[in-house]
Structures are given as C-alpha cells and as structure tokens.
Image (cartoon, helix red, strand yellow):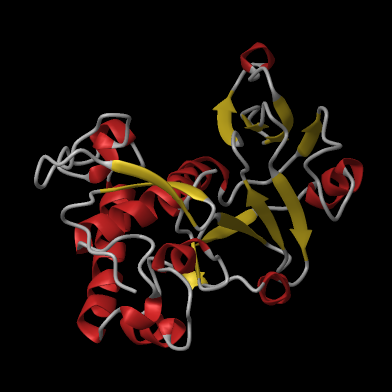
Length: 264
C-alpha cells in the first residue's frame, strides 16, 4: 500500500500532466471494481469539459480539485499508477480509464490488481470527516501530535498505523521512526516520557521529508536506515546486533533487541 511519500510522488506526476488542461473526455476500460460512489459512465459524463485546478495530499489520499468546486479522490491501493502517453498503442496493459486532453495526450490510470478506489466528491471536507481521517503526518504540528497521544493506552506502532490519529504512516516508516528514536515498537504509550514523544514527532517528520525529497525511491534511501536491513539475518546498522522480527499491531515488525528499549 503506498504511504505518504509514495502518494506525494504520484501527486507530483499528476500535477505535471493534468493541471489546468481541459478534459475532452474520459475513456473507460474495465472500471467496475474501482469507482466507489459513482459509475464509470457517470464519472466520464461529469468530467467532460472540466479542468483540474490543483491537488491536495492527505496521507495516503490524493484529492484532485476541479474547476466546479468538486474533487476526485484517488486512493491507489497496491498498484494504482498514473501514466501519461500520446499514442493509443502506448496504453498501459491494465489501464482502467484515461483522461483525454485536446492535444491528444492521455493520462491513464493503471491498476493491475483493481484495489484502487476512485470517488467523485462534491464535499471533500465531509468525506474526510466521515472517514475520520487524521491530519497529514508531515503537516501535523508537535502540539497536535502530543495531544493525539494523550489518553492513548496502546502501542506506539499501533498509534502510527491508525489513520484516524494521523494520515500517511505505514508499517516500514513506523518501524524506522521507532528504531531511530531507540524504542521498541511495542512500547506502550503511557510509558513514554515527554522528551521521547517530542522526539517521535521530530523523527517521524524528518524521515517522511527525506523520503519525499527522494521521491520515495527506496534504492536511494540512506544506507544507515533500518529500512535497508529488514530481512532475515539482517543486522542493526547502529550496533551490529541481529534484528528480530515479531508481530506488533498486527503487522510484521523488525527491531533491534539491544538498542530499542521496550517501555511498558
């Protein structure tokens, strides 16, 4: 599932191709599985003649603003991706639909596993409220982050993965934050002191910003990150201790048993 940095890269690609261009039509392929609150045919009709005027990332969601005040929401699932091309024979194999612009260029939405969700929204804010979607993890202030932690009794990893707390954090990024701060992902929130809580916020945003700056290109992530050592027999880049793997908050979790303290 693409997380905040991956969606940010998709946003950049979308903005580069789609903004401020008249949509001549939408070419539909096989769309039964991805449109959630509208049919493909109705979507195509609503989009004809419209323009995207901007976009807004909130965690794992991309909201594309239309010139009529409405939004198209892209939730990419495992394999959703935008592809820009000029000739029909360049169409990606698993394209579900494509925006066609007057100059003949197309922006296709490719999704091999059909797990993406597309919504047509007349009220973006109402949708965010209904989904109880937390603030974007790269935007949330330290004050708001600390307030979200207050009263929570679960694990810190569970907190990170709950999108109603903050939007955009995923499994590997949560493990990276915990490792860089030096706490076990299964540490209980009430056991974390104020200094540790502030450090979690700081490292979370620093890690996400690094990933965003590197366009979520995993091969270009820093060698010293835990990220690059998550494998059987992998060792901690800080102290050389062999990493351990466990389930925390229902997800596979890597951590260093020597330098990450379990706080309970």
